[in-house]
Amino acid sequence: MSTYKALNDLDLELMPRRQRGRLVNALSGFKSVNLVGTINDAGVHNLSIVSSVVHLGSDPALLGMVMRPPVDRERGSHTYWNIRETGCYTINHVPATHTVEAHQVSARYPEETSEFDAVGFTPIYRCGFDAPAVEESPVRIGLERVDEWEIPQNRCRFIVGQIRWVEFPEEAWATDGYLDIESLGVAALSSLDGYHRTEKVHRLAYAKPETYPPAAMEDFKAGWKDD
Image (cartoon, rainbow, N blue to C red; front, side):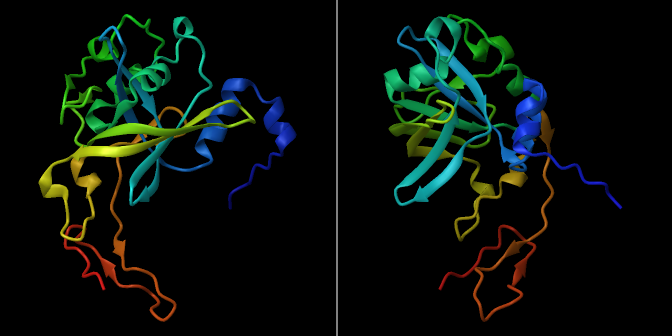
């Protein structure tokens, strides 16, 4: 039987900074991991890696993203300032075959260095959009910044983006709208540096009080018949 470790808020506060960061980042569970593509006014491509992208609604199609407290350009925060200046950015799923390259973009390169060039990703442009996408990514999304909030407790920024375009392999798209991202070999993240491949269990029908257990589907691309 497992022995449980119990920590309170003071225990967390007294931990070494990096140890606390790894633990707290693991507590929300497995996360998506994405590359954010931007460009600055000088035409230099920029990439950063994030694990904070969340769905905010489908009508309109919105995604949220948490970013660290911004500093001046000389010290970093290039992605944040590029988004503020241009108003657009891309979100690109990280393939499990490219986790080493994706992780490396978190290094603090100077602004005049493109992370695309530094690690070997290929910038591509779609739909007349100013921000570059990642050719090696199987799911690419172009977004326009529509809102932003500062989180007062830590000065992090919550960026709200509206999806302007998206592209993915058509064979991964089910008739009911489901996108089978596992079939595309997309990675997941735990804590700050744990990269994973996923394993399907099943899809479950829309839950209703009178229907338990819900119907299960093992063919993820078969699709449900909507009411």
